[in-house]
Length: 338
Ligand code: NAI
Ligand code: MG
Image (cartoon, rainbow, N blue to C red):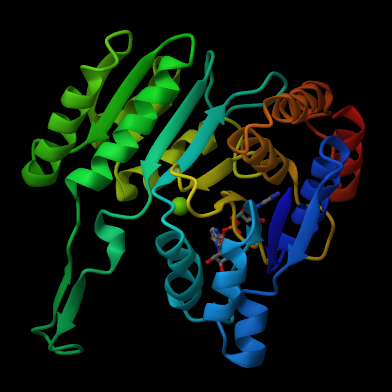
């Protein structure tokens, strides 16, 4: 397994070290290449993602990313120049974000019930494509546009992937989340695509929900969801709610997938570089380890993925909920369990 590693900034290197520890314990054939990208490199050299580095990344089976960001970098620079650029260049059209409430994990909900959902968020279209502009900046007549781009091709491949995942899960249920009553153009494309692709998956039950109603049900009745498919912006927002009700940012994992396999997919914890706790050895590496499980699953290493997932489930069920997390201790435990 040839893995490119972008540890990044802040707690990124701390959690990635533990992720690799666990990965190495189940996949001894692991070969890693480290890439120094992120705020620190930008501050030192002004470089974000040199083309030569992008080419090298393409030669790997997958990418593991820690976190990118620093309070000293103006907003937008790293997001557009590095994180979003990686997603677009490597055609990461599926942003996969599971949200499961593990035994032993406290949800902020009084009666969370069982929560086990898989959100399939579109990753390369919607309002995130940078299609827009500004006129008359810094005047009272300033105009700003941000156009949401939705293509039949782009929506179809993500919806198809969501149906494939739904059909492989026991409940075989898929919820489309959108705002079809107001965003009628894009909404109609998404609805028709779900209907058309759904005809090929008669065993999957399909529900539709407006994103505002869904945000409410994520809190009042999250157990109703199985697989979710949604656009880039709605997916960004509702998955943070899903992460919150299933134990928070220290546990939320994600994969940025090129489902076609043409480019390496990239796996990363949902959280950022957490400058407030960086360097203290107290970041929870579990989100990174769960991202490693997604990575293994994506590479068809189902057994290894299952071992990592089981190690996390066991560790969480036996953790002292009041105890303080020590990054390396969690990594050592998980590596031993896996
Ligand atoms: P953040 O996720 O870094 O931190 C939010 C809060 O959660 C902080 O209190 C932090 O201490 C805590 N936290 C995060 N991860 C944790 C972990 N593994 N264990 C325990 N506590 C954890 O989000 P924030 O503060 O908004 O952003 C910080 C920087 O990270 C910014 O520069 C931002 O742009 C960047 N960022 C990068 C992302 C990425 O690389 N994909 C995603 C989100 C933010
Ligand atoms: Mg987000």
